[in-house]
Length: 335
Image (cartoon, rainbow, N blue to C red):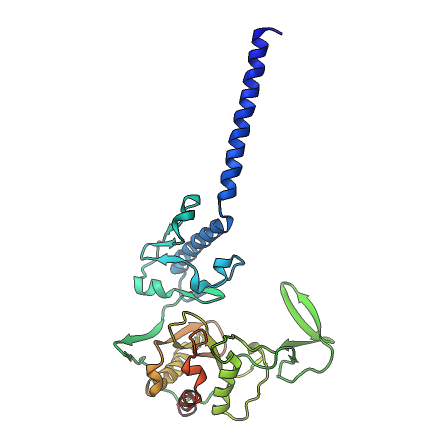
């Protein structure tokens, strides 16, 4: 073999060694990248795109971004991001910042910062993005809450908890308990339950927290104070025929407590006045010192949803105290 042949083999071997070293370095570096971090930055980018897009949608619009499996995205209240007038930024510690972009621009359509901050609502299991032409909110001024402006109405709607029944039991669409065998069946992406050909519904206690009664316990007590004939059963809201005030609770930052009314956008003026009558009535009682804000929010639905307090707030007196529930019941009953 001549010297040229030896030289060519040497160059090939040297190139292979260099390639192997480069590949080894790349694999080592890729092993150091937090893939879940990359997912989280993509979520922030998606939120920025969604908020920008929704701000340009005419009229009312709402979108729900559900929880992810990643540990840091199981509770959206703890998700580390920053929202400013012109950007949305993932604000985890700097250790992973070199692995992906983390700040994305917002190009909002004629929305001031106050409205921008309210287009995004963080809840434990979802991010709720909503644009509305009429977002009626009252915040604390010093220690007092402003009342909302409206034409008070006499409240003559039926009322019941949004959730109910016992877990492990099933109910038909009128709330009657099912005693026959129940089978599971997937309808598209939804798991449903049937007895024979009849669809039935599992009891649902709603939100739970160790420091407060569960959602149904609190809302059922309130409903009984308004109408003592109310039963602790489950009727899916789409099967409740007449427009009804459905009682529920929220779950968000544990330092805050809001009284929130979700008013259907159809016949919104009337529904807003119903919600306004309730929240203003509550502000005329001792309950005013227990709320950090009251709000009437338009939404696409049939019934009035009344969110009476935050289950995440430890030992929340608006949920635990029967005296406070009586005050709210008096507002609803006498409004």
